[in-house]
Image 1 (cartoon, rainbow, N blue to C red):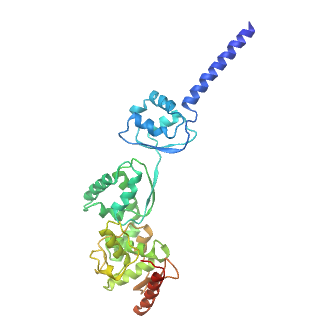
Image 2 (image 1 turned 120 degrees about the horizontal axis):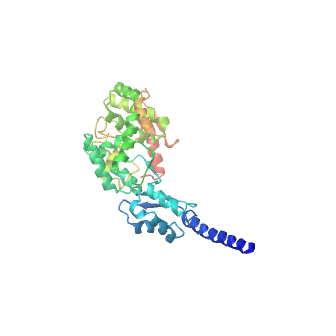
Length: 341
């Protein structure tokens, strides 16, 4: 009798363990065969969700069964979800239902215009570039600007995190908040002291950024030089403004590396060889250092600068036209010897 009872108890444990193991495996055991990100758009159907998950799960059937039990078809949240090893079906389904998506990193570089920037950014968003442009155009109009391009000064070069489902409004808010934080009372005071408008500050900052190649250690010197030229009534004669004018005409499809004499007459309000004064706006997205360089420009007597072939990425500065001619000749010789066109 006792033996029979022991056998029954053992069978209960075995059967319970079997079903318990199946339950655990179905809901909580690892069902990921490889790490990856599942993209679920707003208008996704249940089949689309299952098909997207199928690339990363071991058992599509087990995932589908748990998803159906938990009403994922009705209650999913759109987003970019990280399917990583060790996660079970219950965790995966709950993650999608709760909308616990993973952010994506976006690098905002020295893009020539906002449209070029959005073309890159929206490769990592649910909405396409046309939808983002439309949204930013609306924001620009609300701020009294003509188009999204007039919002360029709100963006700073850096790496940012956004969700795949980010809207144009959410996207811009991050930069608008950063812009307002950057322009604190101290910087506003220096803006007043400079005698420049904010648009002029950004335009000069973009020239400083391009001329310096983003290197902080020359920015204040370059800013001082261009302010000297501007206040003397001289043309700024900045090569990057010519490059921008040409690239703008070709929608940045055929970038040029070297400025020749024939390029200097390119018709554009941004061409500082053809026009006196500061361009009507920035020629690229800038970083905070370049704006600060204009606000804290070095006081010097330089009015000429030329790339230094002995220190690539850096420049030779002078107040002498004769010395500048020598420096320019050395650089032109270096370009020719290296067949840079």
